[in-house]
Image (cartoon, rainbow, N blue to C red):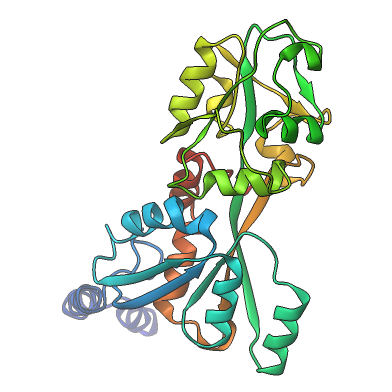
Length: 295
């Protein structure tokens, strides 16, 4: 008798079991799937103001914003690119949500933040870097930094001066519309002006195609295009341009890209956008645009 009662007690009534299941299904319909299982972020609204670096703001940020808004269409953005310093100033003044920076915060900026009670939060998103390329038939495969500077400034006019063939040096660079030529000037040319006879292109693909056709050509492109047929990447001080050498800080023509926020005023929308940039999808966009993703 006792055994039968125990069995009856342990076995749930069918109606109770079905009712519990219906309640569970109803709860899932009302609340949605648990976070992280659907593969999509919750719908967000709001405005994100990004100010600062030209290197980030001219081409990269607009593409990232465009792709982000495909799954968060209710989020709006305001983007201003007047240099890294302007981004820090705006962030400390409470005029933006994100300071886009192509350098670390200076000691003066850190002091000012501390004096204003602002705790800067750093989010690394990748690196700006380019490979210097020459025609595949060019015997020159390694250059010193000052040689790169002098070539693009127009001070070296023939490849014989660098141990190459008796051929005039022909320069192929990015046009001034993008922030890319400014980054190269700062990192590789000590801010010297480009040679006046350099040919400018609106994208890296144009530079790669021109160098591949010209035995005396030299230019700079994203690391991905440096591997295409007809061109070869030049090492700088013996260091080849690769994602590994860039992320290790060994390749000199590179700059880490960062997004700074005020830790006490980070909105969920701002953090969601930064997480998107750091996600595999966002990092693929960096790579597709010639930047170097984080490893």
